[in-house]
Image (cartoon, rainbow, N blue to C red; front, side, top):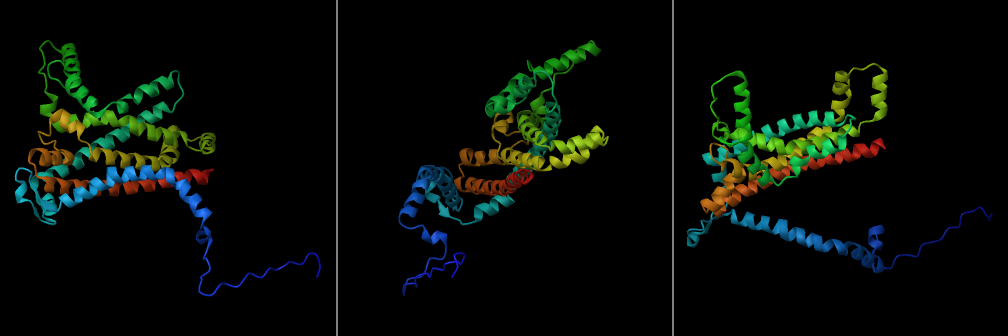
Length: 329
């Protein structure tokens, strides 16, 4: 036998009645298993807290949704199974609130995405004081939602001292002598008033997402397009816009998740009146004013299910963005 010959070592025969471990996962016994649990132990408190805060209340809501339960008559509580869900689907007021939620979500998301794209294109340019301007642009998104709604309701929409009516009177005074009628923005156009306040608050969020997409464009492709004489509109249509597709999808999905659940603007600006009651506000009315615990819980479960569906698509978009970044590198 030469020195280059491979030495073979015969494995010991398996012990009768004891199966051989199938892979590396079976070998994590004894000290290895203790090390694995030691690495997972710091995450257990966070996991327990997450389950207690999110999953247990949802299970309780799911159970309550199966009962015909009015808190004003607790003795008449009885198990009604899925009758509350049928009521949610067939009740005209709830159907109208679902339609209002869809209109509100679509209007806010589309307007904020378009404005966010325009602002992202402007913020992507190099100019003096760009950092300060970017900080000021994201300020509306950092405000507490109730504070932002109060700002729009009193500082802008108020018919007596609001900024919009003051500007309206000043512009009208430049072209005529008579004092113009002071419109009541909330009463005359309630849904549009809520949409404008939410667009102002969510446009910076869309701008940040799209600005991140603009700054991740491959510079070699941009430089090659410039050398080929591609114009600005052509660059945006054939290079920038296809690259931003995933970021636009992410902004639309994340914005939809939050706007569907919005309660602050509707409650603060219109108190759900004048046809602006969306589904979260209707659930609030059903639970706290009508005291119908089971019906409100059923509507809340449907909202959670719809949000989970939207969030699933959002997570897929985020995963695809990460995959594209890894493949690019």
